[in-house]
Image 1 (cartoon, helix red, strand yellow):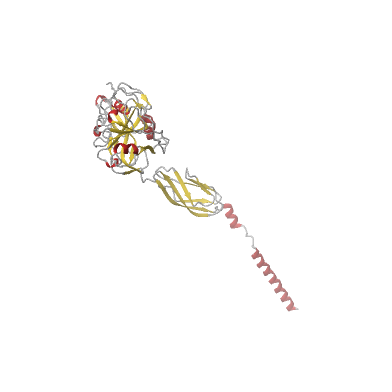
Image 2: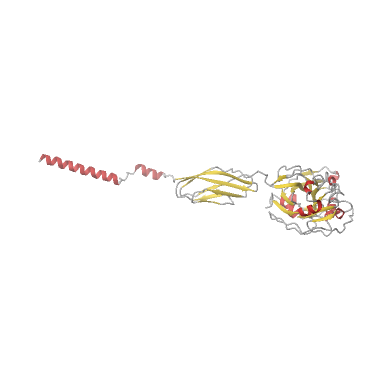
Length: 422
């Protein structure tokens, strides 16, 4: 199918945005780049902003989002701030946009790889026509885990990647921005399917959007919109490809999969994380694998530790839920702790009984316990014990003094007896 662009220049109310990141993520672009993930919001059912779309390029689909879901990545389980679109939302939908829960919808989509119906090559670890789409999250659920319906569709519908690519290519785009709904159209098919969020990108059952909801605490974020982000790709069938895709290279288990499509087509969806929008317009991405809210570390190592005077003492703090740092207070002089590894070590030259406080911390909080440390005298050797048992004791000065007095007393007694005889 040949796609004909109907893009028109839009009057953009846009401004540059500085994005701060809590991880080593690529910052969102100042302008849309092919393969970026775009966040859209629209009010198709209301009287304010019905002909406008607020959009925001969040950055590379694979560099920012997919790779954060790689278990070996330093960003696995990270929460990242992607910026703020509050000013654009307010100017487009009004200051009370969070109160228009029944009519303002959010969704995100992007694609990577060749969009041609005949392409087979792998690009940046993705097969041709791989798409990145969101699904409405069904409540908070477990942070770092999917909690939404399947986004799968038959890989034979090869036009979906092209639709997403065309919808995202807004002419003259800066970030964030506002454009007329018509400026996101490609063959009358856009991110909101002409104002019907429930069938946006019609191949995906239930659409890709979610309306504004009530405040939900999600990984310390007060979100009014929670969208699970998926990578959807074929695994066999229409224009299959050889080579190693990201999910194979990293042994990723599919969140959803289906091999029952016609013509031996099969597909998979990989949950990458959750996009969250706060009431002030702040946008976050909570990557798959995040520590559950409330799951602070729990100390699992023994709470008693014994050592010997003059012998190196070592104790390893152990804790659950992947601690990122450790703390210790109240150690006796001579012992020190490594805050990165949790190892306590040192040599003490005298006996000690001490209570130290040990702790382990992760992004969910800190777990603490009291550790009892006992340093005992060095044990006597067998040779030393025998020497003590069988060697005659050296008399003390007091004993020697008493003995001297006793000798003098005897001499005096003898002298007295002798004088009496005389």
